[in-house]
Length: 85
Image (cartoon, rainbow, N blue to C red; front, side):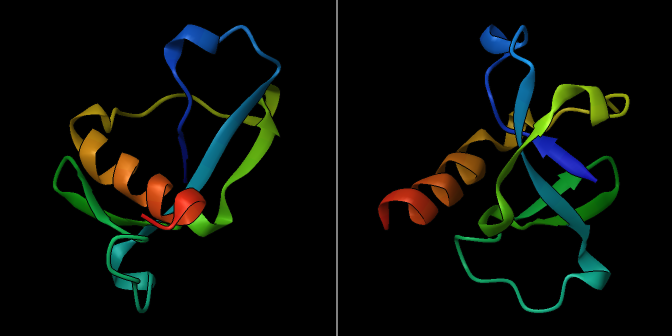
């Protein structure tokens, strides 16, 4: 499963910036801050932000939920990956 990380303001672009979400029970060790555990419904996932990529929007499937409520953890993981803060 992938999480699209870019703003809704750029939905008209041909590519989307994404990172994998791995079910918690399959994720193995997670680096604090870099790989936050995110909840969607009653399931938990580990964000693998270090596997950030741009993919053609055409390969993305349907949207199954939103993690907007996890904005703080998402922003912190991106900041750690890109800026070391």
